[in-house]
Image (tube, rainbow, N blue to C red; front, side, top):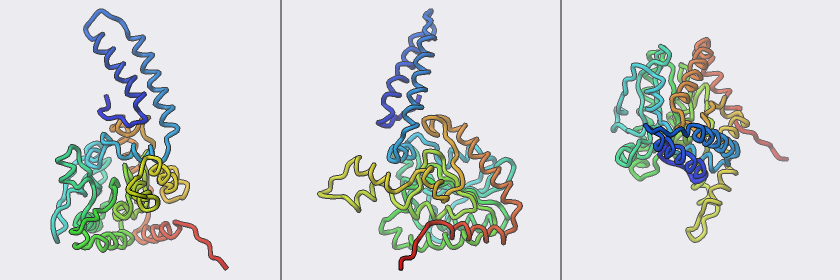
Amino acid sequence: MIKYYLEFEKPIEELELKIEELKRISDGKEINISGEIKKLEKKTKELRSEIFSTLTPWQKTLVARHPDRPYTLDYINLIATDFIELHGDRRFSDDPSIVGGVAKINDVPVMIIGHQKGRGTKERISRNFGQPHPEGYRKALRLMKLAEKFKRPVITFIDTPGAYPGIGAEERGQAEAIAVNLMEMSKLRIPIISIVIGEGGSGGALAISVADRVYMLEYSIYSVISPEGCAAILWKKDGHLGTEDFSRAANALKLTAQDLLSFKIIDEIILEPLGGAHRDPEGTAKKISETIVNALEELKTKTPGKLIEERYKRLRKIGIFEEGA
């Protein structure tokens, strides 16, 4: 059973706890309550379908941050073979909040790079809760350049609240590191595929997602700022902010996968199991793998020059503006 339930999932939790209790009671005993269990399981599925079909943008944000949700290394273990992690930016240090290395997906050699939040307090602290320092982005760029040298496609997994805004990170050139990544990724002569698997926060996400194809998982988010940050800037008074403010900000930011697809900022939504990717990590990983393989099949027919040209056009098409008199 799932370890953690969000507030709007409490009715589901109650039913699943009842099912678990009935299974314990009937285990090894001459009591046949399978009919009752099946009724509850059917009711649970219907309730979950009802709840998740009407999620608000703020609720989708909470699902994107679910502590049981699969992270980059989880997906690497599920979809890749022969993964060898590479460390360090060759300038300052290694940043564990970004992981990357060589691997194979469906026997195709690739370079995989992604944010890693970590599980448990100790690992989350060591990985800085998935908020990279400049050396993380410089490591990512080093691996991308290595991939270009050996003609390996780059796959990136996006899952960060944003780049770390601490004093040390700023002193070591956080903005410069992100800006250089944006410029260099736009010129890489190899296919680049990016998938938002959780949070896609601000420049911290953009720094490894300038790509030929960008996909989002169904309950992931992608935005210039978090709902909390947006609400704090616009409406914070006397230090008081609440869920209503965060929900209002999430609605205004248009941060869901469905919003981003309608704006043509992403190419496709990868559907998740009912209840979120953490309900079936293997099934979600399979869909991600199929999406990557299909995209690589299409992109491998394009010359390096064509890739760069189309990448440029793709970026130039984002956004709409009007000129006044």
